[in-house]
Image (tube, rainbow, N blue to C red; front, top):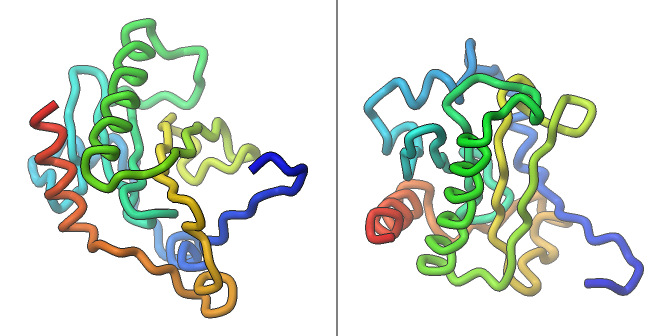
Length: 165
């Protein structure tokens, strides 16, 4: 909406992530070394990067596109990593359109803690599917986010769609 007002995406349920115990190490380094893609919410693996679902999503289908190499500085990514990250971002948009039909996306990267990165030592893109009027009174008044599909069902649907692309 471009009416001069600031849109706010409320996500009070993310306090579990913010205040909860953090896993030791880097989840973006550790998870892809394991083979349990479903349990780790990895939906697609590339040569230099991978796609993982956000365990604490802003919306159903919230994905993270992550280089395998542990890097905090955007200008230190190789041209090959840049290319694959963008290709996986585009593939994510296609897979999400094919599984949950969003009407738009928020796509971005928070570089550094000051910019809001929850995991600031390992770069990653966010792609958040959006629907017209997808924020309503529930998160604001009830501190409850209605996610229409469970993580495992979303993982299975996305995994199937990524394999077909």
